[in-house]
Length: 408
Image 1: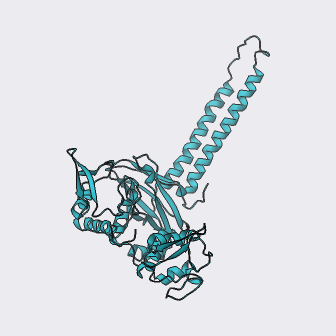
Image 2: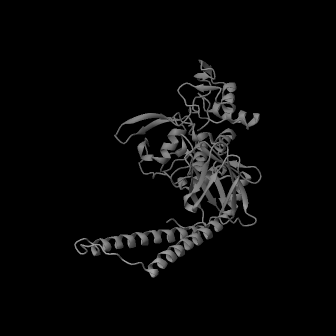
Image 3: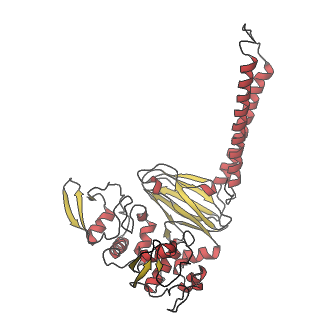
């Protein structure tokens, strides 16, 4: 079992271990009796059947003992259920909205995000619902699982004793991309949570603090000077040669994809004139910090993602739409704006349209009106978004088009 990070998890684990012990014990007992009876009453030892009279003691035993076991199982189950359902007074309430195929979390003050961020040691109450079908909010590390039902608000609560990141899954099959319905529960110190809730996320920290925190400044200079590795400032658009593991070389233009590869798999492309000594930062830098560092190296700006990107993440768009040209469940946002699309309207007619602002806005609010040929019409309507929010999403998609300039 994983570490008990949630106080009520001990009750759940106790109920589980009791039931497991009983099941294993019953299996061993029944198997042993079966083997013994097969030997003891084999026809070679009992060629003639005899009547075995009843036993009041045995009848009482197999009535009282199962009853006691069932009552004990009920008690352990009830105490664990009560611990998981009794929300402490003063718990911070976070709204949870499930939809195919993403989670959205709304905090006091109105902040909305696609991952659940909570303070370490703080009691958190979840008020959960669904916009389409039944989903199930499941955090294995906390032994926490609760269905989210359309038109109904279900509740659960938890607290976390230590910082860390934990998976949030959907435990109820909910459609084609059910496996994509995964996000993160991030527990951070109280002060970090207050800053995050106020909007001062780690991704907006100074570049120097980020690069220093991950040890980059030990080998790289941020002001153009030489070090053991290349300087990191104003790299966007630069060209240069890199050496490949097979001894070859190729010319590259520095962009977001190249910088990401250089940080996560530095041995794959070595800048000419430098040694292959940089360690990989794969799974060591949170995505928000990684994006901020790449953005600074390209533009000198450490601001957070474009407002439209933050909204797209919060609304779960990234569960089905990539930003790098790859296919998930719907068309990629990369180079979508301005492209020509073959679509099928509600009458079944197929024609071509240009993905301009009007088309993109309609696709967000009423995705069933024009379905891209070859795509499955699975996207839900986002008709609850206001005009300003739709405009932000359209602007973000447009920024990822040819020459848009935004980093995915």
